[in-house]
Length: 308
Image 1 (tube, rainbow, N blue to C red):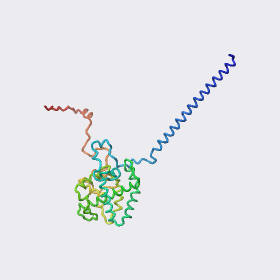
Image 2: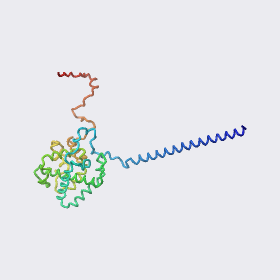
Image 3: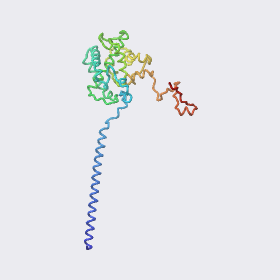
Image 4: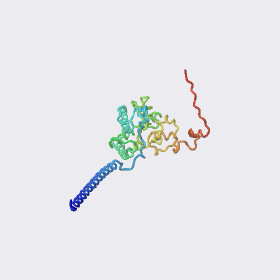
């Protein structure tokens, strides 16, 4: 083989190597490009799943009870008679009460005279705060705007009318215009009032306090006194539950829903401390075992006599 042939072979070999190397680079570049495209698609997909607005968790105050707390106690956390709000709306066991809720709304409208205008005021008032109301629920409420607003209006008016009728019933109608009808099943059935009281204090069975505040303003008579304010009506209805131990005046603005209002009443209107123990309290937390041992406390295993 001549020297010229050797040089040609060497050149061809180098060319082949260069071509192979170039192909490897192309393949690597192509692979990197495909990976980059996949990464971009994934990143875009994740971004689309993120909320477009600031989190509404700070407004959330009406939650479903976690499953771990429901174990063996399911019936403790669900209403027995009436659904209030969206969580239990439409449940078969609670449908009978829907007719009574609608009847209460009818009574309220009939008393006001211009039913169409009044209903329009209710819908407009609640529709204007729909986003706030939805944000109050810890879980997404999969209802149309109309369905959601309807639940707020019907349930809110039912609660207000119930409170007003109850006050009239227990005060023998003194200075009141709202009377329970003779055939009203709520007041003619001994167990209904107690059951309703229980249902209205369930966390999952709440509507925002602001809804009740809006509706009571829209339904208030010109000559109504402070005794028929939302806070006073609520306190009177739950008087037996709170044992009458509540401040004479309590701010309505800080309440989130009925249950929260009653909780604040039971606390006596005090500001909550970050610590569980009030600084002026005579109570002190029990030290842990390590601290007790260091203080010289001795522990003995109790001797249990075996029965024969």
